Length: 446
Image 1 (cartoon, rainbow, N blue to C red):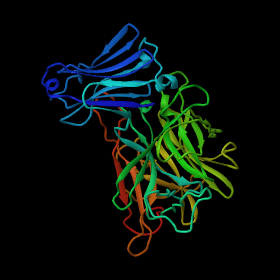
Image 2 (image 1 turned 90 degrees about the horizontal axis):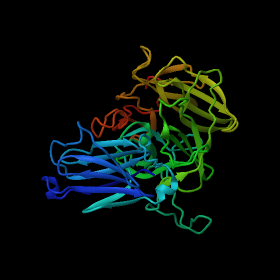
Image 3 (image 1 turned 90 degrees about the vertical axis):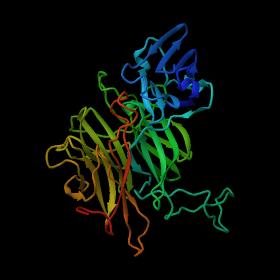
Image 4 (image 1 turned 135 degrees about the vertical axis):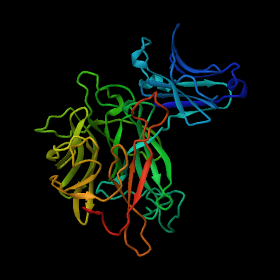
């Protein structure tokens, strides 16, 4: 799922001579990006029927482009051009709105997908226009997961039980993050990605993309806003079902799912089976839950998440239970209306709940990172920069300082849009990293 292709436009096409075509096709359906030398459009063909889609406002670039791009993200097909500026959407259509009866989430249809185009052609998985919902990949106890590095040092006289070389975890090496890779549109064009963060250079490297099957319907979905957890030699992936969200659909809601895998989800592309993750909303008026964050303690599991009273008014919730299938609601911060990114953190030996207060909250609870105890009694705030949108409070242990004291990184994001005005909201954002100015564990007011 989530395919993309691009082709370089030769000089004749850029000057108005015969243009370029770029096609993704499967099962008698062809999705074609067309550059005619002056404007870009999209042709959708099924059998003997073709519909043409163009934007009067955005279809014609001011300057001749250097590349033509075509993206299939969920049910949305988008034509983009690049050069001399960044990638900009020129035409876009939701296949659900067409009479062609195309289901681009169908796995058989996706398996037959091919690409055609003349010239210098590139094709593969769709990447991202921006990154958001950034979260640290952790062990089940909430500590940062440090990946084995097959390119790093080996230990002499040490092997795995199967005889392969043992590569030790490196607490001075990179950490792993998950993110929502924004697509050319709203939530249903995005998907989950995995990245490594070099804490010395603050460089990000893409490693993996995760997609999901649903327990209640067929198809491949780009669900996101996830937490990736290493637990007893397996991976747990708690995801939010944004992959087909449509607020105009009767009964629309967002739920949480859980995937379990023994595969290495930190590299490559994966399509994962899921089951429901029942997050309780007892006593709350709730139309959806999202942003799950899991921690296993000696007493059982803690889960932080968000519950929405309507779209979009939402607040943090904490649940606890002996297993992830036996959770009970512990606390809810119902005085918020735009707070998300609920995160559980161990600070000075105590569990704390962090979140992000967006600008649409009541006065006095805007553009800040509140800190609560597990009963959601507010203790203070993180003293940290607050970019635009609603950046999550993702705390990452920094490399040790020269004096040996620990430091922290706060890895967030902003609302910077991409690809021009045609996609609308959802194409953000840039990654924003803050580094602690003082040593010690972050606590209220620090």
